Image (cartoon, rainbow, N blue to C red; front, top):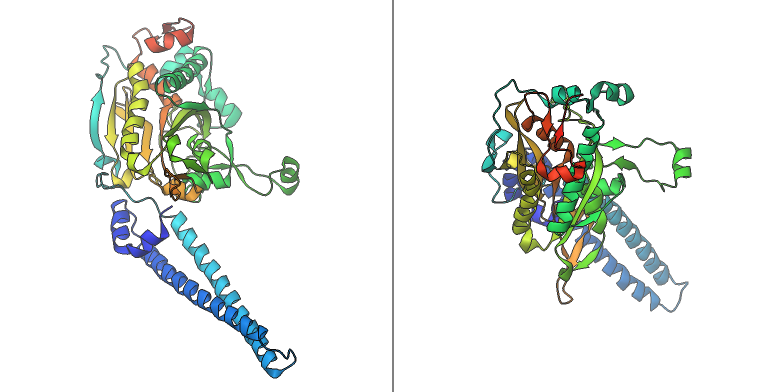
Length: 440
């Protein structure tokens, strides 16, 4: 969430920054400016009324005759002042509620280093790793490969759950598990992340804290419940959502906390299944595992000092790249333009893996620096040493990696003319020594 004071005091600059993202609702920002001014006026007025009430109360206390007209007049004055204060406080609450609603729906301001542009066509390629695989036979996509090998089953998944689900079978399931273990091992043993295994059901407050709510409510899976079920489950009135990414529970680990500067940076990695409704994506990437409702992902989350955000983003991106390099997968890194970044991000790099069957690169990890945007929502702060005033943390996260898309890339980049698929060397120990997945 953006800082109200910064927005209201720098309205023209904020309008220009958000316009870089394609946000063009100037009227909404003007409304915010008007409300912020009204809020300041109300606070000043109510403070003055409280001062007058204190003075009137003291004056009334000095009246000796409690039955006198003077005493009654001062008591009436106190009552009137109390009513004015109550009205002012009520209006202040209304104004602050509307301000919060506006702020919760405003995206983050792009960092100065973020390129201009409004679509993925304006993203900037920063580097490429490896060579595109070449084939002397007709390239097949992961659906054909996996179905022929008997490791991907989309038909039975549809029977169980509907479209955009997949059942992994046999060595497909083992490959999925091997990828998860490799990623977690590398990130914990080599990159120093602390592993966590968080819940996949989270409160609405956690979704709000990282920016999924209210903006992306249609894309989330909310757990439907009735009063009897809620009482039995002891949910205490809050909604529960299936996580769209492990970013949500892991980043919220420090919601409402003040941590010591000496602890920074805090780094976490964790695996979860992820769930997205993919609202508004009808007809897009409906074939195979590219855009499904349930998928697996290993997440990287970092909390840092504001002065370290840019360096931490570079480090995070490199950590995610390490997995692709270990697997020998050709990929590129692109910096997202302002209009293509996620809602909460101020600077982002996407890792895009090469998919031969589509003859294109596809996102496999998005590494983002959020500044204090999420921390302000979560009230996550640190205390500068020694005993300084608490400041908002900066948060970062990225996929390290999306397991399903990694599996897709392995099947397509490592396919052989006989229908088999070579297992990347780094995964062979996790596959019990299996170096090749053969057709049945």
